[in-house]
Every structure is written in structure tokens, then in C-alpha cells.
Image (cartoon, rainbow, N blue to C red; front, side, top):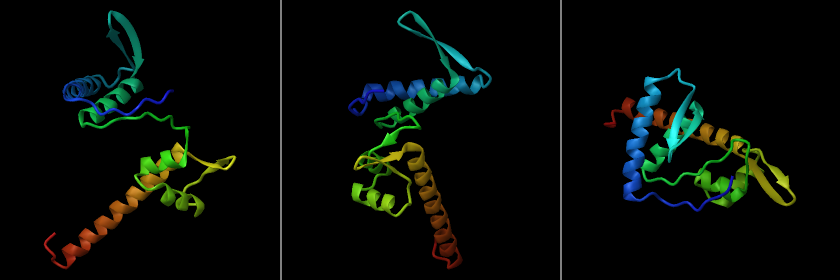
Length: 148
């Protein structure tokens, strides 16, 4: 897979992505047993697996929200900068997490590489811990009648 510069969608693309995402979502919901779909592109028929359609729907949803999207295979190995960008942290902070053993990594020569799956596991765990802490703070605020 080749890298493409991330370009934010224009207004026309946003509207088209939104409408397409809604239509595709509706179709997938109406036909949950369908394992593939025939798609026509400039008079050519393509047969796509359901997983590809679900991925396309998710991509369209992100585009409709004005987000640039990058597809990364789950077995991919990322550089420290790529991983830091995904986590929205600085590269030095990510390196500290790696060196503490918080996120597994391997070395290719002198360069650190992080498996995408390991990075996503860390992110999911971090997000769950944040939600739990927020729930606890909310409960404490309600116990002390702080108006939340």
C-alpha cells in the first residue's frame, strides 16, 4: 500500500460522503445476511466482500466529518513518529512509554518499531482507564452534591 498525502475533503466531498455513508449504512442494515455486493463503476461490475463495504462505510463517515483518513494494516510496524501521531502525543513521550515497557516494540538496527496491534491495545486500555477515572470523579461529585 502506498502513502498518499492527507488531504481534507472539500465541501462537495463532505456532502457526498455523508449521503453515501447513510445510504450504505441503511443497505447494510437492511441486508445483514448479505456477504458480498455487486458495485458498478463506470459500467464495470465489481464484487466486494461485506467487510470491504463496512470499511468503506466507516471511511465515508470519517470523510463526512471532515477528517482525513489513513488505512493501516493491523500487522504493520510503525515508526515512533507514526505511533506518536496516532496517539496524539509527542515522540519523546512515546519513547518513554516504550522504554518503560508500557508498549512492546522491536528494533530494526537502531530504530524502534511498534506493531499497530500493540499500539491499539495500549490506546484502548488508556481510553478505558480514562473513562473509569472520569466515572469515579463524576460519582464523587454527585456524592458531594457539587451540581454535576
